[in-house]
Image 1 (tube, rainbow, N blue to C red):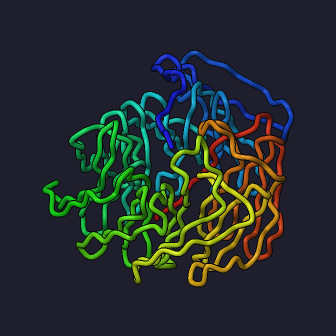
Image 2: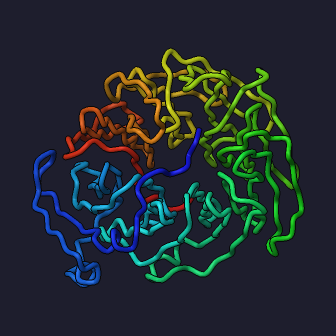
Length: 400
């Protein structure tokens, strides 16, 4: 998957023009107050604090949503293709723009002045109390303590520069070791591990097309390869091969509640867009990989983990497939949205799954809808119609 960001350049002028709009009705029009003075916007009376907010992107900006009603509380205008990820505390979300990572205080519904500039901001990884940013256009890695974001100034943290810029990812372990991918713009090969002083202590280049990461119980970290996964645990790399010569695992979801990682699985190297109907379960204890057949395909925004470690896949049949990671059994399917098909362009909207605690939030961009579903009962607890169909969906999440 080509994850370079091709949206329009978000210049300082455009950011200065970013304003907030309070939406007073679900799915209806709201009042809009434009201002060319960002300083005046920041100086305005602070908004009421919003508990556990959600953030969704649309073509032209961001919605900050009430997680109970799913109604937009505020809109932030922001041109271009933007992405959102939890920052790792109860207040903030990282917004990836064409100019770098911006920090959004979602609880107070305001963009902060904190920015990590750089072309093609990529993965945001939370683990062991630290958040790690990887900027694809420069190969720069920035490690921060998300608790420091509340001070309003850019946190001082560890940095690392990759040998060459590439679409990569990095994660810092509890003891300060830093795992970061290896590659160039044309070819990605594996990962290395650095000690606290950024001295290389381990390397493995047996992971063609390395992409994505996830951490499981006992701090087993895996990155995906075009022929399996590469696991790093207890100071050692272990390669787990796919059953097919080409068996690409590019997106994974992990949890401390289970030693088993959930991954996607694609086996056609010549497909313009493969719509797979198999997912992978990688047992980091036994170092074995199992494939699970589904009766629907899915996309890279379909994978998540439930509160008990269950593997969750949002299928194109509109249901959340709940899989027991130990047995690979699909235990149940929870109706969520209407049937859909993954678009050819990865930046185009498609239903997205975001899970927090016991609630699954699922977007339905074709209907401009958003739903909240109780994973224990399978019941929808809220639904809302938004002014625009959304693309990415996230929210504040404290911790890993």
